[in-house]
Length: 130
Image (spheres, rainbow, N blue to C red):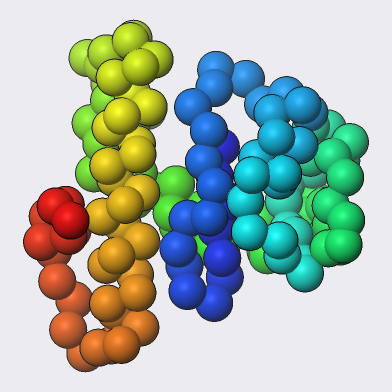
């Protein structure tokens, strides 16, 4: 699961989980930057969370979830273990968490760089080390 800021396209919170549960969504909300508006799909786990002081907009379609869908598509593109059709992935949750943590660091650095220099689109690998 990921939370993405629409303005910067940075990943604000993420969680490696095999299911989306309400308490996990609530934990992510508590540990992330407070937002004003939250858009999600119509899944029950997002409906039961408390978004105070923000407002939650559950969407029956994906019309307002394009930022998070784009970040999720990048996750699947860059991390082979998350590709949908692949069976060649590590089932070790610890290794997956570390991989996603490194990806989120590099991805957010690149997104902020692209905001400053919109005409230059550097490869993600350039931001993989601090």
